[in-house]
Length: 222
Image (cartoon, rainbow, N blue to C red; front, top):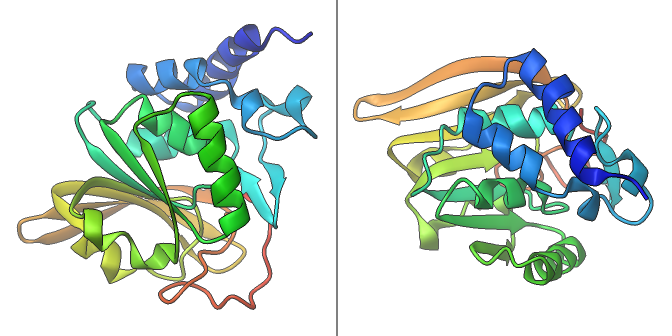
């Protein structure tokens, strides 16, 4: 049987720290969450590889480094209310649950949402709340949020997310074309927003009212 604890330690030491992930809380969360329980039955032996993996329905679990860098950009301290767009396997949400007080996560594909909700229940991630719906609308009934993380690629930054951020809150989102994006951190200030670019990336498309049309083809994330 694989020594998954050791593989997590190696993932942090070899994939995350050398690429500049510095937040000790993020590194600890990545070392703690059992990623192999989120990748599905087909790929447990590849759970800690430096790549994205398919989870069905044309969706993916992101590369560990991408999960870490997006999480670090949220700048979480522990008492925040966070919105995740794109629940997927639940791995990103599980990482966030160790770093924030509450995580609300929206998934448009009901079969994935229900499966992941059960996974959270089984593994006792009790501060994550799964909602089925159009993620481009955000979650206005729970707003405002200290942080919003979008795990799918948007053609532009939806105003819905900015409106649902607290002043001082951070939005982390990949923006660009269908096949190539840049990861951005957007900060809401009293006078507007500031935007800073982080790293090139490729994600599945953000589908919905303020994203891509549902007929757009899906593609793997890196």
